[in-house]
Length: 127
Image 1 (tube, one colour):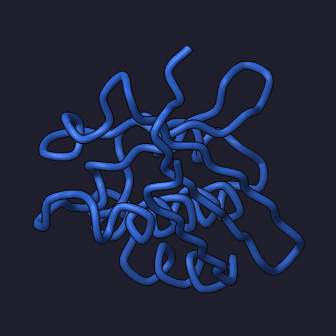
Image 2: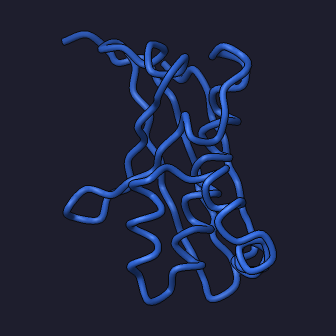
């Protein structure tokens, strides 16, 4: 059963400009330590920061009617499995929202100018 969906698209250039203008203040407000380390070590770091930003937005939209209010950007972490599949990890108030009966899946895509992410929260069907 689908509990929530969210989608986001963002211009990579918008994130690049924010990082160039506000530097670490912007990065540290939005991204977790693991996300910063991952993105900073990539040749196309702005694309990776934009992807994580879009992921957080899509997940926040999917959670908007389900989860408690008052969470922040760092309560949502986007990471990749070894095979590249993007995953979501929740912290603080949100960490208790996804239990063994629920799951979040995301899918990301990008071009030279844009990154998009789709998130779906669903209740698992018992075996």
